[in-house]
Image (tube, rainbow over all chains, first blue to last red; front, side):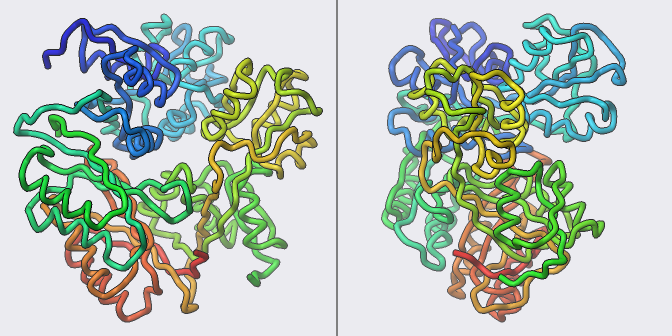
Length: 278
Length: 278
């Protein structure tokens, strides 16, 4: 895609994370602005410190990224203008090459340790697993630790911190991909191959209320690409639904369907229309 | 509830976690078996080391617990026979009482640090946040660290490790509750106030396929208490749906509806019927 090189893109840092990789896939020449949290990425776009922000929304193994879903639901000042898909390949790395049996400590984010659980149990059952705040921090901590320490992180962060990769692709499940969305002030114009993200909440429970709302899409032949529920945070068992639809919000059948759902819900928000990757 | 005192209940340890609290709410006199992971809880039930296992499935702020949802989808040898709801109240604790301004380090699980982000930013912006593998481990690490260290964890773990609670309820959002489910060899008999959990996956995408399946419930007046989607782990954008229905799987209308959905899906699994708490 052709993005202006003058743009500044905010992302969840530090450098070397998969988020930074998403930014470089989205726009290789752009200026980058690493910030400390997913809400801070949105804040950078809202205050104009960055032109766009890139945040993870869904992983093929773990599912939805709850911080991002909740941000899109509750933050009125950003919309989605694009998506990026990044293959996740965890690497085992250390200061120098060594045998698995020599590794006594492994640093990584708890989620990544979880994604490599079987690999770790089979190959280094002796290793003590240490939680880090991010995969990139894990490498930094490992580099300032003793010689028998290793870290699990991205190839990019191995290069950044001059760590030696011992083994590529140590994740237990193949097909590990993360989808990121681009946060922006306005969404994307129609391209003909688009996706529209919306969220909505019902005012009360009743049998069939969700099925009836979804029939607004099905009776018009609109494909539901994704449906996800998030707690409304007021009461256990009450949900906000996030739905991805095939098409652009300016398409007449989407306008009709969304208006039909809006009449049945207490809250409905269009999160943006943007070119779909798959 | 009246549970035999001779039962052994497996849970995600170590002691002092909210999972242990769920076990004590479920059965105060039972023997407890702390194990190292959510899959290990199921394993303990399957191999007979424990009679039942208790695992978190949903938090009112964070949403679904993906490890548990995926376990229920993929593990054929356990079903759900009950549920437990635990209020989550994070406490700030240290070796001795001290002022917020004296705290230089705070240990907790990254998720709990996230749930207390505003409290920490406002009251101890100087503090360095350190990730731990569990809330309980955080207290253990804090107790063997220097005098300016604090931890965020449960009241129960403060008592267990003899830590001093500096402040109760430091979570940013009120109404923080976690729902746990009881893993068992067979589910619960009908009580008249029951919930049935199922999961299913469609063989192909087509507009309206989900809405059509859900209409099997709505047209019979069966209340959908929850719907959630999980990645099928084979391909980004392909999902398995988890649905909680009001009623028991032996109720005739539920049998008809589930059979109707089963004819439209590639996979359908009944995860169990059990008394509903709310």
